[in-house]
Length: 427
Image (cartoon, rainbow, N blue to C red; front, top):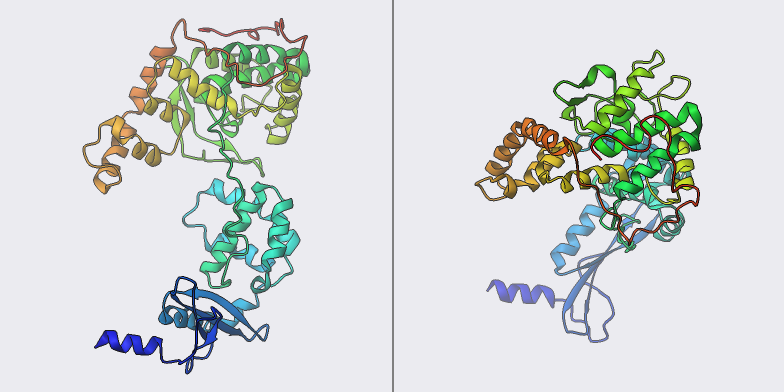
């Protein structure tokens, strides 16, 4: 009986649907129906927007009930929401949606949303046109499009938008660092040795030692900028990472994935000892020649000048973090210990390495995640010991990869640098 009633509801409007066009449904204002080429009945809906005084097409649906529900939700959206401008929502956005995001992510979004706000700040949220947003996205970089798309998704969740005008752009996805070709040990040592000559006696030695630390400790740039002598334990060969220099304000904040203790390799230990002797009154080991904290823009200036002289015009400083991970792997250090050294998120890394750590419960279960996280934290001391043993004495260098494109500077082949510049202990 219910089947007969449903059939009656769907065919109550005696209209010829064979033309494939949309036809209004009798007794249901704003609801339409049509028959597809495959003889499938589809439903559509339009909703009236009192702000624009126009009706708006909401899309197609499988059932009439779905179409009516979409129309009801669209017409019951708060009037105040429809009057909010992009600039006003952007000012509130991250405060409304900060609970589930890391502070480092929030900083990136605050910076990345500026180009979108500059272009559309005075526009009403509900009047954003996809054609205008897509045109802007085609000219803007991916670093600006991604935060804008996230903000508009959140605006949709807050019922300020019916559809995200930046959704489904279908851009070719970046492979990120999956195709990264790690620099060889010889290449890294040659770049390091060039620093004193290329950057001069003031910035050169500092940059040389910074590259040793980045390449042989795997710390992030901001973490290296915040290193202090009191955090180094040369007896037990350990290094405490307790802070990082914030990218925008240059203030000291907690590291991205929290404080951690890592193994101190001989190469990095020698570089940090040179920095300790060269300290000019600042508690920080790495500073500018004037004694002020390093900033991303300042270190980028030094790095771009050095890499150009060495013939690596596209190489990013962050690649030294990948060099460190690869170098540890060449020494036989297991993946889970490398993850601890690099400071990957404890829970995420532990879950991903559940099989290697030997968790008994299936991956993804609550028991597996809790147990593996505890084992991950307990193994921190074991990871430090493994890395200390693996990097003591002679180590295995990373060979040169012929796939890596570079144009070596003709004068860069036989650079010596100055003290400690052309090599390090345990090459």
